[in-house]
Amino acid sequence: MKLYTKTGDDGTTGLFGGDRVQKCDPRVSAYGEVDELNAALGCSIAAGPSAGVKKQLAEIQSDLFDLGAELATPQGKTQSQRVTQAAIARLEGWIDEASNAVPALRNFVLPGGTAAAAQLHFSRAVCRRAERAVVGLAQSSQVDPRLVIYLNRLSDLLFALARLENHGSGVADIPWIPSAR
Image 1: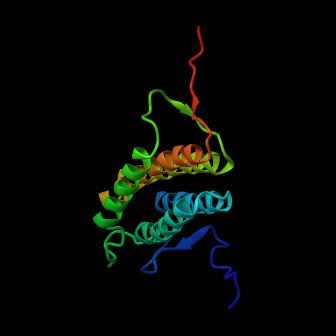
Image 2 (image 1 turned 60 degrees about the vertical axis):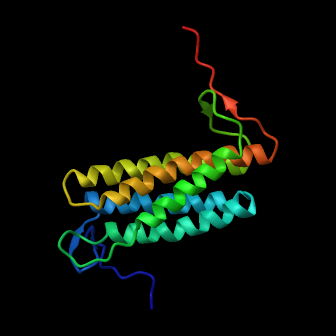
Image 3 (image 1 turned 30 degrees about the vertical axis):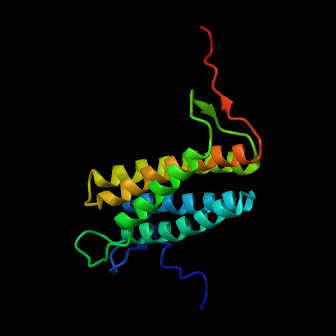
């Protein structure tokens, strides 16, 4: 099977269920942002975080394929709910574990520190963009609210994991110092 199909040469792409839409459709943009997030998480894994964080990120990558599949299924087409409340609860548990393992946050922190932490901060920013795209899609199409909740929790987790990676490497958070104006 060839990698290219030529069916998208006219600027359209296929959704689950067979509908074709423009590649600039908000639904395509939303799952495209989720795909970019998944790639950013791959970079986070390649940056060499701890084994536990790598394992969590790999599970999340699979979740994001499920989330993208839900987004690629238009209204009225049969789909199973792939992003579950249990997946959201799992993220919340991981957030609590990571947050409890580091000093309490006393101020805003700048992205950075170790390579793994910096990449996790970058992935968090990509996650927020994906979340905004899904919220935007929900303005015009039916979107399961769990998808937005999942992305919201994931961005919190990525922040917590970035702090955990720095802490585990003995690198302090970089505090934001507001400019004196």
